[in-house]
Length: 64
Image (cartoon, rainbow, N blue to C red; front, side, top):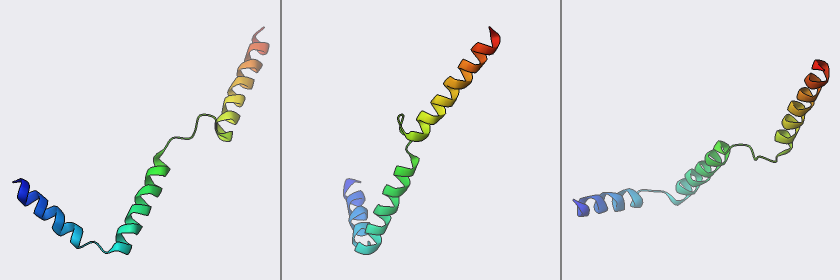
């Protein structure tokens, strides 16, 4: 079974065109990077946090 698996993997590797393989690798990296969540301290995240804090402060002042 291991020989058959190895043989099939080697056969698949032989059929890859180097240019196509590189393009697929680049596309995969681009896709994976797009799946990452936004960094915690990004500009957008900081602005959203600031808006939540200001809204909370406004509600606190209005309720007193």
